[in-house]
Amino acid sequence: MSNIRVLVTGVCGRMGRLVTETIRGESDMLLVAGVDPTGAGSDLGEITSGRTSGMTVHGELAPAIAGSNPQVMVDFTTPAAVLANLREALSRKVACVVGTTGIPEAGFDEITRLCDENDTPAVIAPNFSLGAVLMMRFAAEAASRYDYAQVMEMHHPDKKDAPSGTAMRTAKLIAEAKGKRMESPPPTHVELPGVMGGELGGIGVHAARIEGVVADQKVLFGGVGETLSIEHRTTGRECFMPGMLLAVRQVMDQKGLVVGLENIL
Image (cartoon, rainbow, N blue to C red):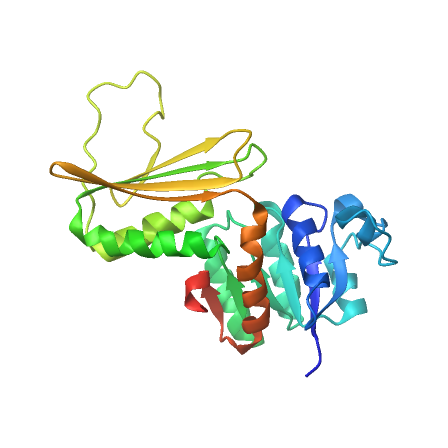
């Protein structure tokens, strides 16, 4: 069986650099192109590992696809760029694995349509960590037993969207499992506007951005005389790589749009 031909977008970002080097180290994958406007014309290896590779970073996706014939695009870019990248890749029948978060709800509808129209699959995962997937699953299982729930996430200061895609998906899974609104009594007095965070289905969702954190999340359920805390803490971005590789290996066997790593585990 020939190696999977992979193109990575966002290769100059922290996740993009790690994804690129991880794929280069896999015996069943072949990195055929890297795309990032901020590093256009630079040597890809020098950006990702400090070692010359002889592969030049592309500034635009369309010519990169045309010149490298990838089977899979892995996207770790920004909310502002990801939809345009998906339009380009799916229209050219390149399967997509997406770790970029902050895609609006209408964007998922468009991606579903593009997958169907081009008979090309995509996997979008708010979080590629196995621990994070288990955290979300455990939270959904606990939802039916409690009437109060809060989701609290913390990320590094450079994260573009808030709340995180993981927090949003966790809240949605809790709401779906509960089947009705959680209790969310309003405070009697608020000193700072917005201090209570946002709300989804009666579930409070809170975001913090602070140096020293990679990606942490706690789900707190409350009941009579007790609380249940389900927490996932990320100590390094390497934890996202096994899930990303799994998605690259399995995406071409999927049909349409698949949201959530748990659906291909």
